[in-house]
Amino acid sequence: RKEVEQDPGPFNVPEGATVAFNCTYSNSASQSFFWYRQDCRKEPKLLMSVYSSGNEDGRFTAQLNRASQYISLLIRDSKLSDSATYLCVVNIGAGNNRKLIWGLGTSLAVNP
Amino acid sequence: DAGVTQSPTHLIKTRGQQVTLRCSPKSGHDTVSWYQQALGQGPQFIFQYYEEEERQRGNFPDRFSGHQFPNYSSELNVNALLLGDSALYLCASSRFPWAGQGFNTEAFFGQGTRLTVV
Image (cartoon, rainbow over all chains, first blue to last red; front, side):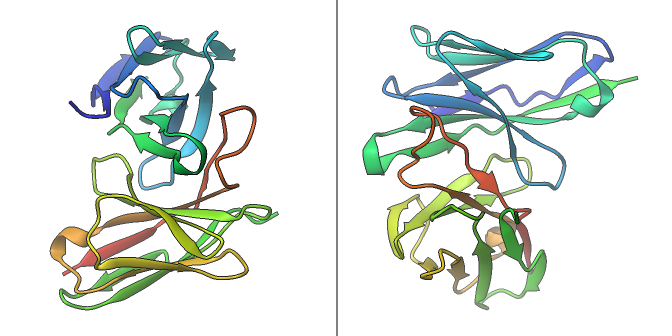
């Protein structure tokens, strides 16, 4: 089983739709979690950190379920500009041995 | 405040050649990590440098080596290039040891170097 798994998609949704992505991780000792957004041929950029209590930033909501070892990203009222690849990232290890493990990404296309 | 800068942005090399990629971290950051991202894949961790030493390494052969300088900038060297080395090489800077707000921290990425091996 891969350390971090995502459905690669593509997800094709109309403008205004609500779309959700899930990401599962295998290491129960994982300590922190992030969603990055990557536009075509660009570098990844942090979208949201994911906190245990869940967190919301405008149209974006991130949730963490430690018992089931998954995180989710919900996008409401999708915009054309949301079209991108969304990468799930898990920080594992402790102290000096922490490292980021990346999912393969989920591709989202928002259509007019 | 300059972010993470990488050079060159694009590079074409032939099999068997050697290549050096460069990265300057964001101001205030002291740790540089290198990633390889093949088309349609997520970034794969190559290694991380802090205090001019390689601190962690991913599953990459010894053909991949690096260096960090006293000013925190870093180089990634790849010897004996293979066609499969064609990818986007990303540099990320942060503060060691991933310190930040609790366990959460942010890695800032450069725009990447797109390497094509022919």
